Length: 68
Image 1 (cartoon, rainbow, N blue to C red):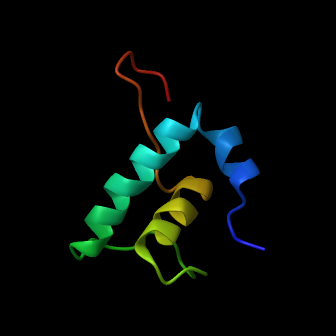
Image 2: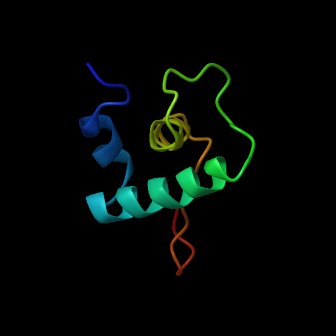
Image 3: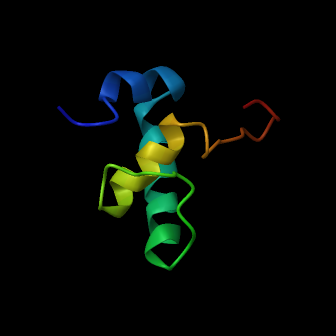
């Protein structure tokens, strides 16, 4: 079983496109030596770390009209 599950992730994001875009941007930041915001990550890969940050509310996206 993968963590976080795709069901949990799609409930938090409005679409899969937003989820993929957000995770890829954060994974690039992590690859370039950005600090990990999760205390005990389960994943060792950058995309997995980004998704763990998103599911734990450490990574938040904001829309252009100010919605979160």
